[in-house]
Length: 344
Image (tube, rainbow, N blue to C red; front, top):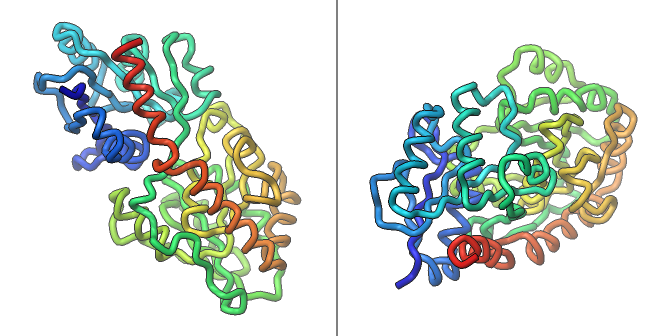
C-alpha cells in the first residue's frame, strides 16, 4: 500500500486555498508521478484520517493560534503521524499576528521536516529545527498556456505595455520604482498595467502622476490554477517589473515572480537582490537593477528602446523555466522530501 499523505493547506476566511499553497503543495503533490508513489489527499482540517504524514502549510487556518496548533500537534503525535511543515516566507512580518506567530513557531519546532523555498529562509529558521530542506519553487506546466512564451510582433506595440503583479503587501516595493517611471521619456507610447496592488491612496496618487496611462487589470478569478492559466495565455506585457526593497523579510523571498513572467513570455526587470540574483542572468534571462532611481531608469530605457533585447530576454527566460523550473523537471524534489521523512 502506498504511504498516505494529508495536506492541511493554508486557506483564507472564505475557504480558498492561498496561491502559495497551490504552488508549494497542492500542484506538486497532485502531480501524476508523485501520486504513483503516495496517496495524497487534501483538506482544511484534520479529522483523524488514517495517514502516515500530515503536511501543514504556513498559518494553516486564518484564525490559528498557539492553542489550536498545539492541539493539532498532539493529535498527530498520539497517532504516530509524521509532521511536515511548509513555509515560504519569513514569519516575522506585520501580517502575522501574535497568535499566528506563536502557532508558526510551534509548527516549526515540532515538525519532523520543514520545507522552505530558499536557502536564506532555511538559515533564518535554523534555530527552530535542524531538519530543514530547501525545495525551490517550480511551476506546474499543466496550468500554462500551450503557446507558452509566444510574443507579439515587435511592430505591434501601440502602446508598449509595462506590467507589475503583486499582492497588496508590496506597496513599498512598488514605490521603489515610481520615481524612475516618472522620469521615462520615450518616443514609444507607454502604458502601465497593474495586477493586485494597490489599495494605498498615496501610492495611487504617485502612480496617477506618471506621464503615461496606468490601468488596473482584474483577473477573471483569484483562484491560482485559473489565474495562472489566464496570466500565461492572456497577458501580453512587453516588460514586467519586479522591484524588491532590501529588507530582512525580502531577503528570504523566492524568485517566483521571475518564473511567472517567464511563463507569460515577458522580459523582466528585477531588483538585484538575493531573491533574483541567484537565478536571473543579467542581460540573458532578465535585467537586474540596483536600488537606485538611475539604475531602474536605465533598465527601463534599455528595454523600451530595444525590442530585440526584450524578445531575447523573454525567450531565454522561457527556456530556463521549461528546462529547470517546472514540475516536469522538479517533481522528484517533493517525493524525495516525503521519503526522507518516512525512511530517514
